[in-house]
Length: 148
View 1 (cartoon, one colour):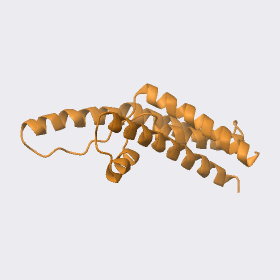
View 2 (view 1 turned 45 degrees about the horizontal axis):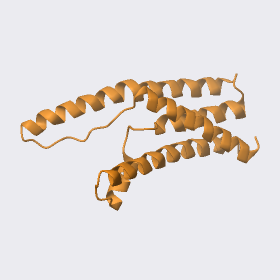
View 3 (view 1 turned 30 degrees about the vertical axis):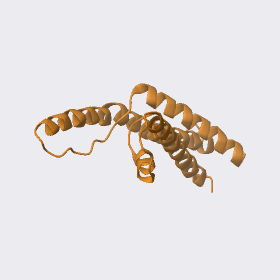
């Protein structure tokens, strides 16, 4: 049964980060005078990259739950930390670089009159740090609620 708490922490971490990004995006859109439609709200919620990192928040919360439930010296916690490290590295390096390259490519395509391609954004280090802090808060809330 305790394994479900890991999934709950993962889901709450991801949802909290995406809701945060959505609210900030809507607020910035409103300040800039942009029309806010349901489509724009969904676009903000489903977008990759931005502050905070949902990947980091969800994996931080889940990994800490694994450590709390199975022990911080357990092999499964070590594996969770390894997966967490890969996810964070990917978000700040590979996906970030691909996003920057996609933006540059779209500028060239726009000049050539071609259609732009979708861009998948990564994260900056501050976005990952805030995502990790959010994940810690989610972990603490899940542990308090479950009285683990």
